[in-house]
Image 1 (cartoon, rainbow over the protein chains, first blue to last red):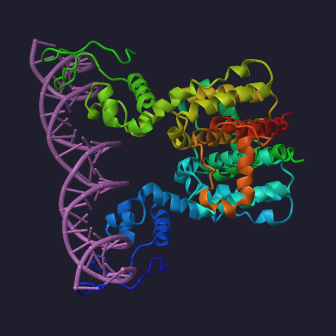
Image 2: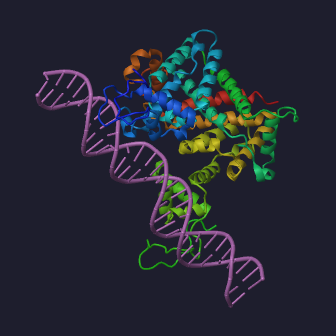
Image 3: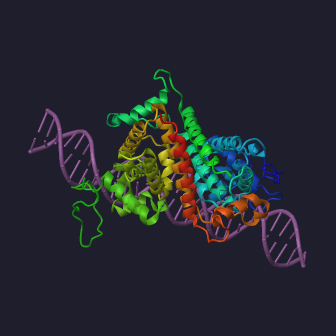
Length: 237
Length: 237
DNA sequence: CCGCTAAATGAATGCCGTTCATTTAGTAGA
DNA sequence: TCTACTAAATGAACGGCATTCATTTAGCGG
């Protein structure tokens, strides 16, 4: 798995950015892990709008059509990225310590990872887990953690799904713009809502400058996670 | 607001599907509510993949560019659709009865509406509420319901956001394919997860045929919603 | 040596959102 | 009543996108 860098094929003349001539090169230029790494780097630099097959090919110094020797579609690239990200989710808490702490550590890191990658959420939600080994590994660790904590077998998956649903939704919330709840010119006809938004923005005393958007998202996530953890925890035998 | 149907401009000859000649027609053909209705109908018939500006124009018997006299972009069309859907969410429970019942009615109907329209979820999550009157109206009713139930002002928005996050995530779950948790050939290396999936699919006794996907999604939603409602309900003064 | 397959190029396709010049209809003001 | 101005339509065009296909080349198994 030579990933990105490989021996350069002979090129026609001077300079570093030379065109490769047609035909199969002596050493393969592309492989799945290289494509994944390039896609992640591209997303980091240009965001998901910048992740096009053409741009990906350019980063890898390859013609766009060459990518299709290794992936079947752009969706396939997204799946590779998604599965890689799953390996970044922290499941270490399930090794020891309380179930509550393990779930919270897992949930926060899960949310944080996908808050930076919300365009993948629709992909995850729809794609079978079959050819996503990292994803499968995460589910395995979490399932075992729930079982060891005394969950009845048939409630484990529903509980995980409920938590994941909350996590995905909350990941979107992190990226919401500052003024998402600004009722603007219609504030007059929504007095309760407008007051509630102001209270949430300024905190208990109406004087403080109030938290910025990220902290507000954290507050909502914390609130919901605590409720879910205590509610689901009660299911244990 | 004549919506879809309007007096037909004089056309050049026979037949119903005649081309309109260039230039402003005597009676306007398009307006926002007509565009919204046509978009919804198109989505119902062809799904969100079928919702293109060209297809929308065809349904409305108009050139694609004509749409841009009434909306600034396709995102704008999606916002119109989204706001319309918000008016379908059932907030009637907040008129009387217990807070718990009202929240559950609201949450279930909210999830059901957007389970059929998951491609809008990324739009909702990012778009300010400012020019979405139906959405604002929903938030107003719900905010008032929370306040009347004794919620402290500064906790109302975080609680609603937490519930919404769960609802959006759960809407995706409804549309997930039957075999989403099929570990396939890697089942051997994920024993706990595989067993948990089987238990969830067959129910407490391992014999029954087990619920189909929609019921499983309902079970997870019910579990999470109960936990959230009881956890959040404890915040009331 | 021969044929098969894998992996690259480069040209081409079709769709999609959007823009622009143009035409026509109504309307407000001199 | 002429005259701008604006609103609302057409139709041609554009650039970008994912994807496909014919072609070329390299290595490998018989």
